[in-house]
Length: 260
Image (cartoon, rainbow, N blue to C red):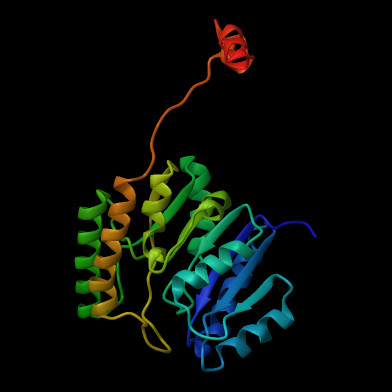
């Protein structure tokens, strides 16, 4: 089977009412790109009918693949499972709550080529959430940028496009889905930010409150800061002579070692 050009990875948790509308909107947009694609839906141990709705879509479209956990393991685990399964050259991340506009996916892919970068992340400039959610996100965003020395306008936007090798090489820990941008920057990958649309939630409820957005994110920030301080950074070169075994004096020292 030919590998697709684009893999869209979407975690779902208790989103049964959003599954069908999301795919009804997303699939025609992906069809219109003229590129091979797949959608990897990951059910994170939902107790409602989310898994059943995903398998119904997969039964109708070969491009849709479904992974599921028997119990809830969290969004980072769902993303990691999806990244491992993804076969595309580009991996798109998004949520399954219908607040992201799928029409931004081809725009982001084009923006990657236009800017010549390794990944692009979204900025929900016109957020459609309530005041508490916007305020807690703003606080968490400011704290993350301060601790990680980043300048990301919207660290929590789920819509991102990465070269697949970035995510395939990345080791994730619990909560690290919030820091994909910083983790990629740590490994030297280049990026750009793009304004994307944001919509009101129509069905279900948000899985994140103030505790998740501020306090847990703060805890995880310190973990990422620790990683950044201890991240290995060095330039190394090998001289042509040593690469061929002709380093001056090398043969003599080897003889002496053999004789001793």
